[in-house]
Length: 478
Image (cartoon, rainbow, N blue to C red; front, side, top):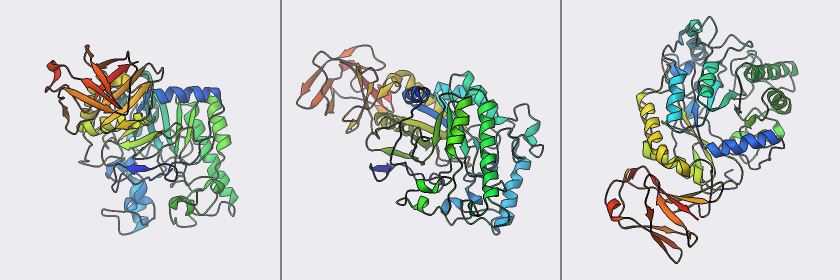
C-alpha cells in the first residue's frame, strides 16, 4: 500500500509498532453475494472494538513478541528471566499457571462499547504465542486448562463469553486468530531452535510436520466457527504464514520470509463459510479473495483507497495491557474517527484488558466521552461515504449513502469549540436551495457562496460560546 498511496504514520513507538503491516496492493471483490452484503453493512457501521488479551498481560509486555528471537525493539526481553532465551520462554509459558482474571465481566465491556457508538468487536482468540482464550481441543495451552487457575470459573471459556455478551448487545462478532503458533510442536519444532517469527523448518523438507500444522490450524478455526454462535468476521493475523508466491519483494518483512507457508486458505474459508454464511475473511496483507477488507495499522490514508478498509489503532500506546499506559485524548480519538470515515474507512480501536480482567478507568472514561459526542454527531459517521475534496483545512467531509446530505466536520485546535460570526468552507458548493444546520441545534443557518467558498453564518446566540467539544458537524441538505 505504501506504493500506491501516501500514508502518514500517526503514532509510533515500541509497542505500537510491534505488528507492522503493509496493506496489500490489489483488491479482489468477493464473488459471494452474502459476503458482499455483509461487507456493505460492515462499511456502514464504521466503528469497532479490538482487544488484545492473554497471559502476557500479567507482565505488562508487548503481546507475544518477547518470545520471538528477532533483534527488534518490540521483541526485547526484560525482567529477571531475560538473560537466557530458553529460561525466558519457559517462564513466559508458565504464566498460564497464574492467569486468573477474576474481574472479567464482558457484559460491562459490551455496554461501554455500545454506549461509545461501537458496532462490532474483534477479540483475540489466540495470539502468536499460541495461548488460546477459548476451549480448544487441540492443545492444553489454553484458558480452560486445569493448569490455568481461571479454568474453575464458570466464565472460563473467555472467547465464548465475550462473543455472547457483545452479540446480545447487537454487535457484529469478529474472531482474531493468529495463523502462526509459536507453541505448537508443528510450527516451532523442538528439533530446531526458532530463528525468527517464521516456521523453524522447511515445510517442503518435512511435509508431515507442516501437514500436521495445517490440520491443527484448520481444526481450531473450525472450532471457532461451530461452537461460538454466529460469527461475522474471521480476522487472521500473522501475514508471514502465506503462500510464497504472494510475497511482495518490495516489502522488507515479506521478502525475508524463507519458506512457503501455505495453510490452504481456500479449504479453510470454504469450511468457515459452510458454517457461517456471509463470513468476512480478513487474511491480513495476503492479497486475494481471502482479504475481504484491508487493514492499515496505526495509519490514516491521505485519500480513499477505493476498496473496503479498516485502520486498527490503539487507544493507548500499547496493543496489550501495560501499567500506566498513556491514553490518547478524547479529542484525538474523535478526530481520528472523523478522518478515517472521511476517507471511507472503519476505525477498529484497541483496548488491552488488565490481567485482572477489566479495562483501565481511563479507557472507560474515553469510551463514555466518545459516546457523548457520538450521540450528537453520529449521523455524519454511520451510513456515510467519502466525498471530494475529503477535507479542506480543518474541515472534513462525509456524505450519506443516500447522497441527500453532506456533513462538514469542523476540527478545532483546542478541545472546546467556540465560533465567531462565520465558518468558511473552501472547495465545496451546495445546491442553491440547500439548508444548513449544526448537529445538536435545531435552527437553520444562513449561508452564501463566494467563489469556491461556502460561508456559513453563525447566529449571534452561538457566537463566542462553547458549542461543543472535539469536533462539531454541519449538515447540508441538498
